[in-house]
Image 1 (cartoon, rainbow, N blue to C red):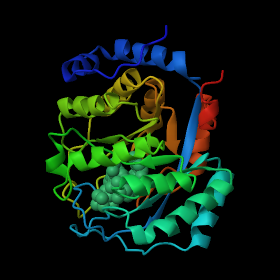
Image 2: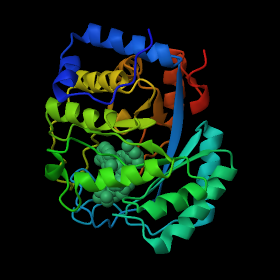
Image 3: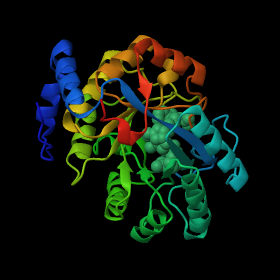
Amino acid sequence: MKQTTRHDWSVSEIETLFALPFADLLFRAQTTHRSHFNANAIQASTLLSIKTGGCSEDCGYCSQSAHHETELERQTLLSRETVIEAARQAKETGASRFCMGAAWRALRDSDLETVKALISEVKALGLQTCVTLGMLSANQAHELKQAGLDYYNHNIDTSESYYPSVVSTHSFADRLQTLSHVQDAKISVCSGGIVGMGEQRSDRAAMLRTLANLPTHPQSVPINMLVAIPGTPMERAKPVDPIELVRTIAVARLLMPHSVVRLSAGREQMSDELQALCFLAGANSIFLGNRLLTTNNPQVDADRQLFARLGIELRDEHDLRER
Ligand code: SAM
Ligand code: DTB
Ligand code: SF4
């Protein structure tokens, strides 16, 4: 059963999906997933924080904001050698994409050439490239595309109405503007959000609606579970119900049937069974590697064992559809 791709969802329609009996929601998500993807294959990306901490923004969840007193050690831009060595290792470990993150409000033109050189070198290793550098201008997006950038990660994180409770130093509209520059430059978009920041189900529905109603669905949709970081305003946020995380992934799969949905941050805090349910709900990508940006990810060996137990194969993005 082929689904048509829609861009006109209402929040109430999406809330109806969220409220389905769990078995019905999962059956629908699996059916959609299987009509577009091999259900036993996932893609892996590896993260590296190339510039860490001291960020001017006040995102309430983030260890890297200069507004919060976290234990994090700041680190200026890593050397080319360090980055390329990490990318080489990521490839060896089985990642097909390397994602470089910087704790910046926005990319500065003075850093553009350095970042472009990193992108070109990582690409030359035979990896897909992704960067997440804060806001971009239209021209910067074109420049990054020229350097060989495949993906730009820029999350909307939550609903438009909850966004000001999470961040005050930039707006939801700022996020959408960068996404539009990225789409205009023909770079694939990676955009998703975080569950467990104290938002309501209606916020999760509204967040997914914004993503699904973009002119083109983001090719990659990361769903992060909040990693509660001591010293941030969200350090004591009430953990989200794990079943609600699975529902969020299933609804993302239904709304964006062709997109790769990534079970992103928070896997270290999840049981194997919860991760298995997330894959069953349509998640078909993960971050592979012992570290995320500033926090731990499951150890690579543990992930390999989990995938073996589930009969899941790691594949490049382009092979996720093949049987
Ligand atoms: N500074 C850039 C920006 O904000 O776009 C790039 C890096 S930022 C760390 C990338 C994304 O990581 C955030 O938008 C958020 O979705 C996710 N993230 C950051 N800290 C997190 C946390 N503690 N738990 C879950 N996700 C987190
Ligand atoms: C995304 O959605 N999650 C990644 C990546 N995109 C850049 C980041 C997760 C960060 C988790 C907390 C940390 O390690 O600092
Ligand atoms: Fe963290 Fe990015 Fe927000 Fe800076 S802009 S505080 S790095 S999420």
